Length: 464
Image (cartoon, rainbow, N blue to C red; front, side):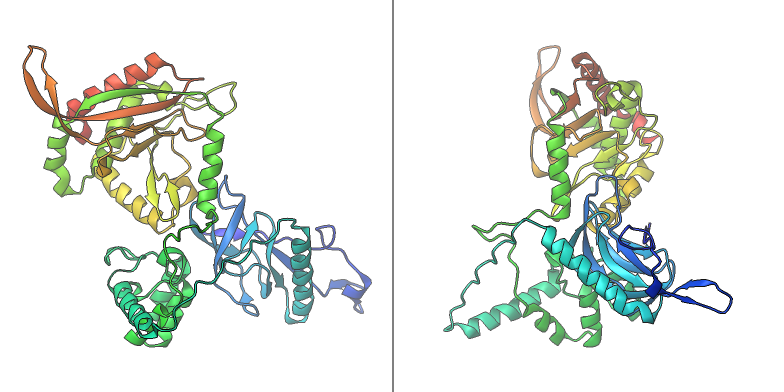
């Protein structure tokens, strides 16, 4: 969903101030404003966003804009979004270039009503940029020292560049073997217009992300292989350089703030062992129909929450709590540069087949940084699953504003003793729930986990 740039009239008092030099009197004695300069602010794209990063400018300085045109792609703390303009005019001056960061509400560009006002807009942009620079007391970090390259190995370095180019074509960081391509919204739109295959383009954005200039460069060369080698000749950024200091990304900053906020909540943890033989058998039976294990776990959890609504409640002010009317299961997903929790809304009411389709859609959007705010901010209970990595148990940190989060470990064969004294093996998994002790108590979690165990060990209700 595109967001709109709010661009009110400007003056030194944030409203339009009429000056004698800005007015001319007609024969009908009407006052007409000659100069209308609008400030384009960094929009707030989510409730937790405090600053945004300019991914790419869709329009350039001097371009004429119409109301509703997409102007810029902004990276918020969770996603990238196309941002539109409210007004007609000319994009006179860009204050924050691509890759730059600005606080929510601060100017990122200036819009002029007509060509006569462009110079005035540019002067306002210059003064705005100067005042912003002078008000910042934080010294700029020292540039990283260049890494010397042995002059006696130019041939080997060239060979490495070509090899890197071939490697990037076959599987660059933005493609995961050709199954998925990570690109900015404008890059995708531009590729469609230019009839360019994104899977053939080498991304130069963060972690190999394809941006608009990559598409334009590829299209300009006609998609020849030579363009790939040329792109690969750019300095290659290593994933991690030992001893280097790497600043947080916008998303990592948001995660950091949330984790610190979590420390203010008094939490406790309860673990439980659940036998998964029946769930595993059901999964093998319906996996071919597109059902995912995540959807099965989310459905089972939602059905258990329906019987224990206090586990699905939330306390935000420390003085009251809310029984949430919907059961929305947020599931933690690791993506490039951070963590996000796409939400399966009304998971107790939606069938597991629809949940699986929705989950796949959400994961694709999350990894492409295209989730809308309502798709990651509306969770009432969170699942964090590390079982696919062989982790048998772990504790999760409670997300602010929710009552509980459940950490799910791997299901593995375990030697157990039956009630009649016999020894056998069963597939079992460990789950640990972290809960807000201001609202949820030990007995509440114990009863919830008993119900969840019963549903998973007899999963007949999961496919209805």
